[in-house]
Image (tube, rainbow, N blue to C red):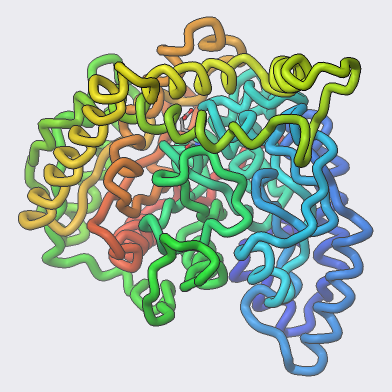
Length: 485
Ligand code: GLN
């Protein structure tokens, strides 16, 4: 018999509604699972058991009064850069190690109003800067498929927790791939919504023009359900899109006949692992078998996307992280009466090496005399990248690519060379630069490790992407594979 912690969101919902088990039993089961494997996986920075059990009791009451909805009683993990009122929110940084927000992020508020149960806060690369979760100031998260390997990042905690059945569903954030890449490396589903689809209010900023919150789930339907719960207009985020509410499950028909899919040659990069190529190519064949037509397309400015991202993201990061001065909140060096020394020491001791590297890169790119050559140029390239996508989406409905050119790599493998680490995100970064939606779904294995396929669509095409992913999922078994941990 399957255990409660193994359920998908959809199955858990059905069980709760049928009173097959209570929300308290479901939450307890998840904590039992956490007790079994968390010591090895390390996907949580903070576990909120007593808070969760109170929420679960309230959820049971709501369900018994007929007041439940999709999320009522569903145990979730939330990435530790999304504010939770009264619950420590660290960004996996020494700087915010003891930071307890006085307000909930928009998405937290939405989950709680709907009765979700917070299991705890997910580990991540410090301030979401990284691709392996090794930049967490506390500890690295491990990949449940192979504990000696990384889960990807920066939302490594989210992907590892869902893959190891330590959460039914999780929220991550994606600035250049941080939802999709770890989902791919851990064999689960992750969607980065269109920029503006989900409110960033209460998301601790890394690069504000790129950041977007999204779900990581066990299958496509779960991601659609979780996206329903968090999407929507919020006047507190000036970039939030004011659109009528969408039910992202409504389009999950599994019918993709006549759909035109583009295969951009630039995404099948040099250095891509042969096993990844094989898995993605056979997934494309399968999509054809389901009635989609496939054609090669080209996005010529892709080759500049990585350079463009590593100017824009650090520039925005250097501005956003200027607020950590030891005065307003967070870590504060006290052992001096000199203001400048206090500020310097606060930042020296509070930030880890990758965060400092990004701040320096950004401050350099923005400085007088270099601004035009770097930041302005990167913004111009950004326009070209957006135009590439706009043109290609006049020809095709969606694009199919690998999510990551490699499968999960061993811990420590890429920490010595930042550029090697940055290169992991070549297939995901351009999507953030253009503000597009994209989803990663499991599409096979290479040497025993999960491979993810990425589907990219025009702005606001989440329903289409979810349906293509759903059609593929219906025809395959990959999403059912679980690590034997
Ligand atoms: N790995 C990329 C970076 O380090 C993207 C991270 C993210 O999406 N937050 O910036």
